[in-house]
Amino acid sequence: MQLAAAYALLKRWPQAQIAIHSPNADDDRELYKDFEVIACARRRPMAALRAIASAAFWRVTGGRAPLSSELQSYQNATAVIDLSGDGLTETFGWRCPLSHTVPLLLACLLRTRFCLMAQTIGSFHRFRPWFRWIFSRAAFITARDDETFRYLSDWNLPCSLERTADLAFLLEPGSLDEARRYLRSLEDFDPSCPILGITPSNLYNVRSVEAQHATPANSKERASANTSLAYLESVASACQALARETQAQILVIPHVFGPGEDYDDRRAAAALAELIKPPLKPLTIREALSPPQLKALIGCCDLFVGIRMHSIIAAVSQAIPTLAIAYSPKVGALMERIGMKRYVLDVAHLSASDLTNLARELWRERQTVRGSLTHKLGNDIFPASQRNLDLLDSHISALA
Image 1 (cartoon, rainbow, N blue to C red):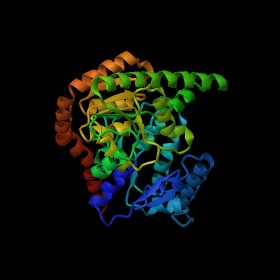
Image 2 (tube, helix red, strand yellow; image 1 turned 30 degrees about the vertical axis):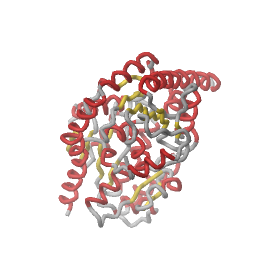
Image 3 (cartoon, rainbow, N blue to C red; image 1 turned 135 degrees about the horizontal axis):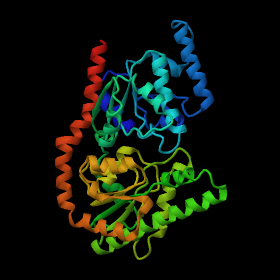
Image 4 (cartoon, rainbow, N blue to C red; image 1 turned 180 degrees about the vertical axis):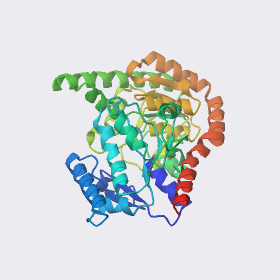
């Protein structure tokens, strides 16, 4: 999402200076090699408090107090674009949404306008007054799904609110020829067979643990392992059934590679591959690839099953028939937004039979689905994604 936004901004404004504020700056510098990458403090509570205090002191001294490089970046910016994804919600607790408001508060204190662009936002409960206060200070807000748009519409915020689409739809895939060459380099790849792509997620395991924070540590581990095993077994069973019926190859594509082992989808990919029984031999991606490379590989698939939301966007943005397994409301909202709500299953109630039957249906209807996606993308989604940049353009022009 951030990479797509950064390149889309650069394409529209070639002379723009774009700074990526990342809590994992050292890891991200290679990915964002065409941009400035600045370490931000929002995930480190004490560092975040120091940054807020420093910005507040700068403000009360009339701009005479010194600023760190992070704060100087905010203060010098024409606009701060917030791309929290689904971080602005209390669905998964309170720490994540509060950390995501740190950059917004810093922008306010340093007198730089900010916008919330193409996100899933809400719901909020005990911290709703705080979020209403901070959102009221945005230059504009865009929602990437209908649910967010309806939710924030009831807040009657003073800023502009508009429904658009996720900026990740604008990510340019890598070379399709290079993706095909990569596939041919994999052992047991058969270019004559259809490809059934799967992207499991290790994030679901992590959030299963977080949701059970009140249980003893060893109980958390057992519950998470059981939940994970049931989910992966259902996916493996369904994909095996479909692969046998269609003579397809199974391609397991991890989509996120960190930070840290808990968020590395290669763990879930390896576990899924082990569950697929002979004589089927799944092809598994093991190296960390860039988002454009991953999107190109997904574009080679004839049918795709995804749990990571942006892997699903990588598929549907190329009109690949896609079945989404939803671990979060944002996934269902995405599929509703693109007119594919029929092809969503809730991971918490996933069964091998339901997944198999829906995958069979999607395979039968794949040509119709491709046509529907192509029409929806061209007439709605791509223009709506570009609309985020139009709004930013209007905002920047008003400041000139």
